[in-house]
Length: 427
Ligand SMILES: [Zn+2]
Ligand SMILES: [Zn+2]
Image 1 (cartoon, rainbow, N blue to C red):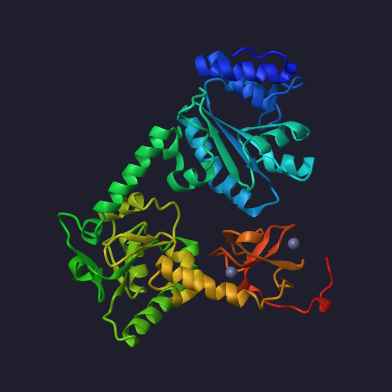
Image 2 (image 1 turned 90 degrees about the vertical axis):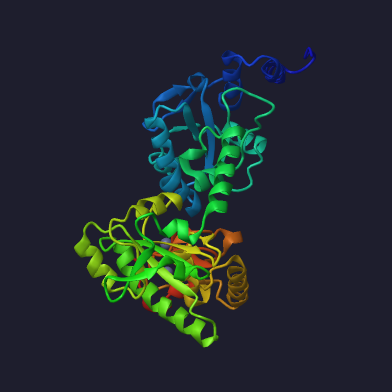
């Protein structure tokens, strides 16, 4: 194909794409990144400290285009809680990975503040045209959004549009984000799920029991088969755990009562999976818990943490009566729905969400809350909400919430303590 009679720019772009399709040389693929990221006046990107880095330096790299903005809480959480860690890990392993930030910040100050947290490159804030072109080329409709491009353009390897989901799901394992790698991960996950049973999760060849009360009582793991089981990853030294454990104890007791009341057999149990530093700490913490535990320092503890990819504690993983994972977000569900979360299945959560949507219809659109000086607006998944950490109770939330957009201050609807605004002087 010989492009003629076309405008200079279009001709160049077309020519490089045609050549790339036939010839996968390094030189040409770098011009592919240039055509996306450079302009005729600018052949560089900004590094974290503001130095200029040539776009041609991206040659041969797997490239993440990160569409994000500081004013949106889910963007900030993804940046600081997922992307920075993944990026630094891959860099420290010498992986050929780079990220370029495409900002939707409202002004230069906001951009610079946000960029200060980002160890990767950025398109200068002033280059609206390139940012706009990238947003439209990759059809960005929601942020945070991470597009992954392979170093060589390849018609079998379409750009990945769900980099955010892939990193949330697989972490750095997803690298280099090729079709082959992702198929491998899917397969591993499927095999892991199929082979997962309560017995192979909780026993090993030296031990087929868990600890119960009074101390040293042994409860056979086999007696738990067929029940809904919560694996509670926690430790006495863990501060959020100190807050969550008493709540979980009270809800555990309510679930037990509820189950008995319904005339069902006792079909719920929790197993403490301890990360305590020594036996004494384990003993004293486990003594405060009404459920079962894996012995302190048991080899199964590390295996379970890896198997369920537990990144922070406290964490409550729920297993169904068949021993398969129901959810890793048991803690979140307990916080949101208390004992009503039981048995933690998707069907139960859907039911609760419907009830909550119904109830939210009667909530005021905005409210003043004793813990914040600005007025808070009611948000949900579709209107700027999404997963958050409640600024009042420090627990996770999602769905309906009250949010101060300016400050990023967000609380559960149940955590709002109404105040009479007229009686407070603005500071
Ligand atoms: Zn809260
Ligand atoms: Zn505010």
